[in-house]
Amino acid sequence: MAKLKAIVTRRWPEEVERKLGEIFDVQINKDDKPLSVAELQEALRSADVVMPTVSDRITAEVLSAEPMRCKILGNFGVGFNHIDIQAARARGVAVTNTPAVLTDCTADIAMTLMLTAARRAGEGERHVRTKAWTGWRPTHMMGTKVTGKTLGLLGLGRIGKAMAKRAHHGFDMPVLFHDPYPPSAEEQKALGATRCESIEEVLAKSDFVSLHCPATPETRHLMNAERFKQMKRSAILINTARGDVVDEKALIQALRDGTIAAAGLDVYEFEPKVSEELLTLENVVLLPHLGSASRETRVAMGMRVIDNVTAFFAGKAPGDRVA
Ligand code: DGY
Image (cartoon, rainbow, N blue to C red; front, side, top):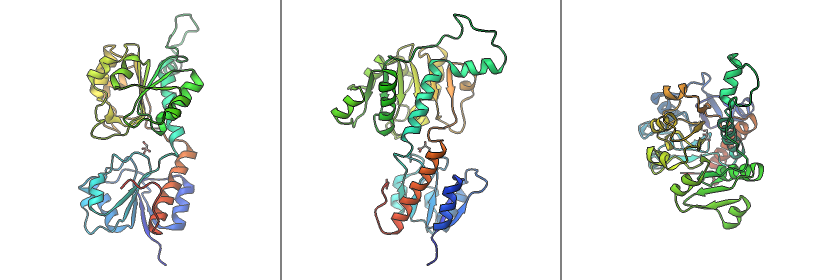
């Protein structure tokens, strides 16, 4: 039987590309540059399955491609806000994602940002590299202690829970959270997490606020000028969720005028563009969307896409179908 045609929009780890080649008649974007609208449409016209990532915007326009050969978008990533789900449904194209396999690594990056921002480790590194360091002194580059401080989580899904586990059990941090779909009381207890009725309550009481909600129309600019004012002036914001959950312009203002103390960001509102002003601020730590970027996790994500897509074509329900 002829192999199904698969188009992969970016490079994947070698072992997963090899596996793709065994199963599919696969076309990989060797240049590893984001495909244009026309190229994405051509992919939908010419392949049975397209495997996109967060860097591909699969809009209604892209999905208007005719004739549509693609039956399934096997997304490499847990977030799927870059795919117009309604339009995919309307075109009869299934969509899957890759939850669970990236939970730990994304929580690790959120912890990295929290520690780096609190202890001014980014500044410190720059200080050493630029040869500005003149030696130890009692008042040099004093940051904020993390252990025992209160962590506020907006979103207590898989990654939020993994963050709570690390912070509570590793750093003795009381955890507050707001989530419209809270986990069971038993799970909350195990994580040392206390539910707050409102986002405002979490913001007012937390020393660190970490975002773990999905990007939806409802969560766009969840953190805006008003909400920054509700945080403690000593507080630090961490975002490993999605860029547009934060109004980046309002964040820059809040970091500039001391409304909040600092921030740690892995994602950006206009990604991959990073606002120029952020690059000039010392009190923000900036990472290039590294949440899931460990070799083990990226391989697991690729294998999960393969499992979803092969199940789909075998007439079974893919484990991670979102549309
Ligand atoms: C995800 O899995 O959503 C990550 O942000 C990368 O795609």
